[in-house]
Image (cartoon, rainbow, N blue to C red; front, side, top):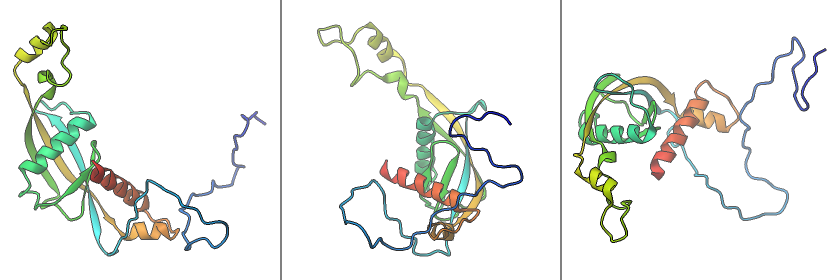
Length: 199
């Protein structure tokens, strides 16, 4: 028999590993002392369980086809898409995770959409707010060079494709302790929506 590290458990041959299911909530507690507790949670009520939300896959590339990485850039690009093409998006509001996932409450007009947006490169004109000085209040040599540099713009290509339809019933089922194939995706969607609402 092989030696195991302390606190490491290996299942016996032939036995399946236990599945993890959400714990059902069965009302409020009835024993113990009542306490006041502050949390950073939000109460979410799903009023219409027959509705679906829509998950879209997002691809961001530069004009030359290289992938555009980074959540900050991704969010700026998607914000610009929303500002510029709101009518082509049927006015849909959406939550974006900064990487590859975008969620909407209603469907976008087509299953696959392509957009081109231009953003100014903010890194080329950083002189106000964080400019260093030579002691007399005037910018130092490095800041003067940045000040002279013209603002550059970058062109991004954005492709948004339908990835899945997520039934809201999956959230209610998970809260009752029933695992469905969509429950993890539904909770991930809620997490992204709540984070987007706080920004």
